[in-house]
Picture 1 (cartoon, rainbow, N blue to C red):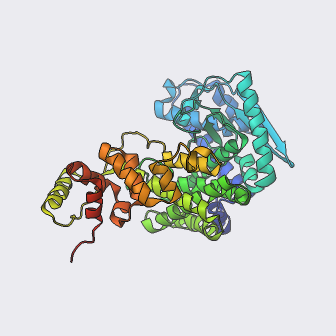
Picture 2 (cartoon, rainbow, N blue to C red):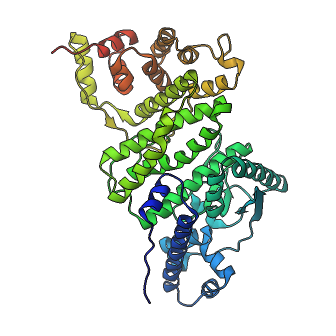
Picture 3 (cartoon, one colour):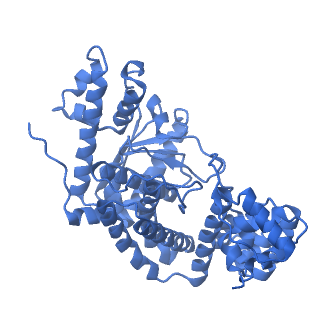
Length: 479
C-alpha cells in the first residue's frame, strides 16, 4: 500500500497562517486528524489481549457511522489517554449520549454535541459541570442559535470555519474570578470546553477563539512550526511565562478574536476597544516570534502570513481616547506580569540598598524568574474601570465611586494618580496592583520598564519614601 503524505500548497499554507483557511485546507486537516485517530486506536488495540467490541465496530471504516465515531474529538481524547494510562487500565469508550444542538442561518448550518456525561471530557483541562438541566440546555440552545445568526450573517468566513471544525462543546464549571473560561486539547480536534456563556456575543467569541486552537493544533500535526526550546517569556494573554508555541497559540487564537471585533468596531466603543487592544497584542507577539529564533522555516512562513494579515489593521482609525485606554490596559498587563514572574535576587537587592544609602547611582541589576506556582494574576481593577467607562457606568466617571488612583490614571491625570499610588504604597509596599499603577504613570522610563526593581528597592530601604526611591532609580547614570 502506498502512503500518501498530506500536503498544502504555499498559497494554502499562507492563507491558513492568516487565519483564512479554505474549505479544501480544512478538509486536509480533518483527514489528517482522522488518520491520527486510526493510528491511536490501532496502538490501543495492540495493548489488549482480545479484540474489544468498540474496535470491531470501528474497523468497519467504510460505514459513515464508524467513520464519524473514529473522527469524533472524544475518540481521539480517549485513545490518547488510553495509551498514557495503559489500555488494560482504561475503561471502554463511553456512549455518545450528549445533546444535539443545531443552528442554521443564511444557508449555513452548525451541528454540535453538548457533551455532559462522557467521563473523558475531564481530560480537556477544565472541571466539567454536572449534566445540564432542561433549563440550562434551553439556554445553551438559544444562545447558540443567536450566536450563529450573528456569525453567519456578519462574520461569514469565520462561521464557515466553525461549521467545518467544531463538533463538541463540553460545559464546565465557571471560575468566580473570570467572566468566562474555555479550553481545548491538541488530542481533541473540534472539541471546546467552556463555561455557560452569558450572552450570544460571548459565545461567538469563545467558539472562534477555541476553534482557532484546534486548527493550529491540526496544522502543527502536519508541520513543525516551532523548534524545541525551553525558553519561556511574556504572553499578552496569559499570567504565566509561555514557550514559543504557547505564544503562537495565543496570537493565532486572538487573530480571529481581533477580526471579530474589527467588524464591529465602527459602531460599538467596547468593540473598538477590544479591536485596538488585541491588534497590538497579536502584532507584537507575532513579531517577537519572528525575531526570537525559535520558528522553523514552516513556522516563519506561517507567522509571516499572520503578520501580513494583522499589520494593516494597526493603521485603521480608532477613536484616540479608546486607543489610549487600550494601550494603557496592555501596558498594565505586562507590568503586572513582570511583578508576578520576575524578582530581584538577594545579592542585587543588597546592592540597591547599599547604593541608595551611600548616595551612589542605582546599580544595574538583573531580575530573575520566579518559579511558577500556578497563582493567577489578580483581576485588574483598571481593566474593570475601563470597561465600565466604555459602557457609560457613572462609577467610572469623575465624581463616581471609581475615583482614586485608578480613576485618575484612566483620566490621564498622571500627577494625581502618581501621588495616590505612592500614598497607597507607603501603607503597603507589597501592593503589586499599586506598583503596576505607579509604573503606568511614572515619568521615569526605568520605573515604567522594570517595576520589580522599584519594588525590591522599596522593600530593602523602608526608611526612604516611594517618591525618593522613584526619583533615584529614574535618575540618569553618570558616565
